[in-house]
View (cartoon, rainbow, N blue to C red):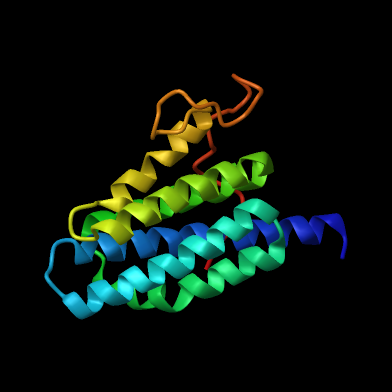
Length: 176
C-alpha cells in the first residue's frame, strides 16, 4: 500500500472516529435529561467498551486498533443519531472535523487524546445523569491545541510548546 493511500485511509478512520464519538456523547447527553434506566445501563456498558478500545488505540496508534475502536462505537452511535437534539446535531460535524484533523496532523497527540477521552468515559460511568460529557469533550480540542489538558490546566501535552497550531475546521477529508 503506498503512502498516499495509507494516509487517506487513516484520515477516513479518524474522520469516522470523530463522527461516532460525537454521536456517542450526544446520545449520552440525551440520556442525562431522561430517566431511562435500561438505556442508561446500555450506554454505560458501551462507554466502558469504547473507553478500553480508545485507550488501546492511544497506546499503539495502529490502524487496526482504530478500526476496533470504531467497531465498538458504530452500532450504538447509529442508534443515537435520530435522538440527538438540534444543537448537538448542528455542532458535531465541526467537532469531528477538528478531531480528525488534529490527530492526522499531530499523531503524537493520539495518546493524550485517548487519555483525556478515557477520563471522560470514567466520569460518565460514575454518574451518567449529571455529566454533560459532550460539552466536556468539546473542550479537549482547544486544550490539546494549546498543549494543556483541561483537568489540571498545567500539564503539557507536547514537549514542544507553541508548535501546535489551530485546527483547520474546514478539513480536507470527507467522512460518511
